[in-house]
Length: 404
Ligand code: HSE
Image 1: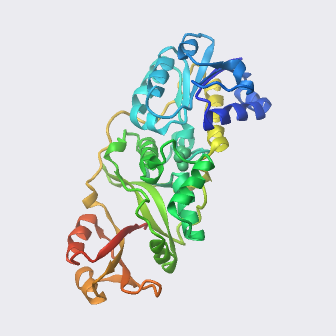
Image 2: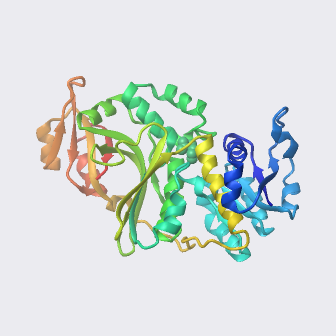
Image 3: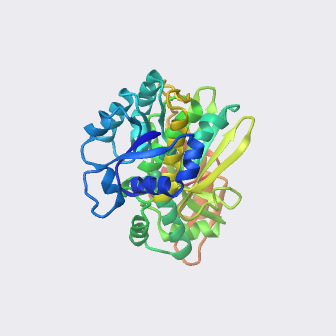
């Protein structure tokens, strides 16, 4: 028997208990052991819920019980999750977590403790909900030098952008829907401002490039300034707008990473990733393109990924599964050096003036928005774009990057 303790009985925690109870027989078969939920930790009481029998309020009970083999951290946030996880690992208990904030901030330290103790710290559910992307990067794409990862990494914002573009929904109303469906973070600012996607692209990039990308170094822009008018322009251009987390290796030791809304064309596989779905596009030097797609948020998809880690840890109780993520920092080039194309909406200027400044541009007009127009620049460094756009003397309404 392998005893587990689940820290947190919220959306994901209750999902973990449900998944283990629903698929008990097949999970045990795959784990090669009987997975037993010995404890669930939560500050709250759950009268009438079967979990009452194993509910504890004091973490010491779990940390001090030598029969607990695996701790499942699904509380979210940095504290007390960090203290609890570190204590569990130091006591020789493997840990799996869905907590991207914890992994992005303390991942290298926690992985090192797990290595020293010959146990495991796994975090499949921290990125892409139920999509098995961490395991793919760690165990499957090992023949490649990866040079790009671009993902739709936040289910809440993808759901919002999809509803805004297809049904013209208002930002606040559609955010409330995403919260009601259990997709959003406790503080949805983390979703709409891109902080959640930022931590996820930091984790994926650290695994892909084998070095620690500090999420605080990643330029991050959310979706709060995207308007229905921007969506109309996107449609006219045969594109849509998605919040992307992206990182690229552009030279031997030269990388960039960012989170921002992007215009995505119909030919991109990311164009059709709608609703709460997530997708992670990976480019490897021998593999070429690959895309991983699936449910990006919500109780059961996330719990599915957490329980897959429980199974892996039960199979490797006293053997560390190597993770390709060193603590050596990954440094990024300045954002002004990053190349791309830019979609710009302007008013109070003319096409001739825009062409005089930017030379070759693709112009787009919308009948419904007289007095303004949009254009897409040629590929240029962001610093060059910033210099040129100043010559338009405050005519810019908005700028959105174009995904190439
Ligand atoms: N709030 C997150 C999202 C949950 O919407 O993607 C899954 O990490």
